Length: 252
Ligand SMILES: Nc1ncnc2c1ncn2[C@@H]1O[C@H](COP(=O)(O)OP(=O)(O)OP(=O)(O)O)[C@@H](O)[C@H]1O
Ligand SMILES: [Mg+2]
Image (cartoon, helix red, strand yellow):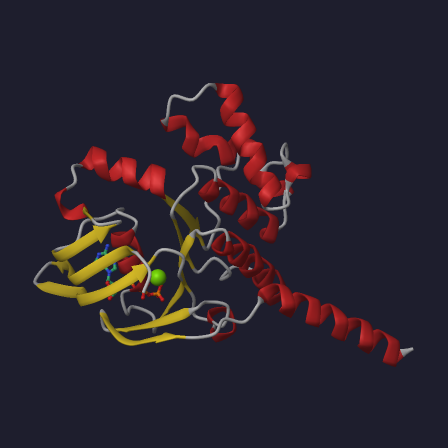
């Protein structure tokens, strides 16, 4: 076994709605090691996003324990939580969540604004992150001037720019066509190969294939947790290309 990055023990989250209490997380215990690539699946309303919000320290649990890299997160102050979020965790969302009025480069540099790095260094780091996602030629484009897949790449560069230990991605391919979705998975696999732990939510079994482990939620609980040999998204892209060429040749 590797070193644990995330450990949750009997994690609970209740939402009180008038007289009703929704047990969005009803006692989740699991451990995710450094370097894993985990897909979280499960029906709508099963607690996936709630779980991601707890792991990303966007919200506090109602009960249970959460350790990040062996630190007891439940004892953190708001400032410590903000620092953990900013320095150790990158976020990627279904709808990209880029700011529309600023360029790709400025969007990527945004998380660096919280530190006290000089402007020139921030720009250099953002440029490097855009290069890593293959968008060095699109730095001055605003989000509307980019395709959906390119916007998601900018969002991944923004998640990457602070050199996080963990990337949390809630349905990162949900707004993309399946080919672009596989390309985004290839990029996430490349980042994972460099040591970044990835936790992603998906509804699509074809996307979950690219993870090393699949955790299934139901009614706020983990009902299945399996390790698997992951498919290679790069091989899939190459295979599709080869098949398209073969098909093109056959059609002539
Ligand atoms: N802010 C909130 N206030 C009250 N109830 C909430 C809140 N957020 C989530 N819930 C409830 O908690 C449960 C889990 O919601 P969650 O968003 O985690 O589901 P999910 O698995 O991400 O679903 P989906 O696949 O539709 O995104 C649902 O019953 C939902 O209605
Ligand atoms: Mg959700």
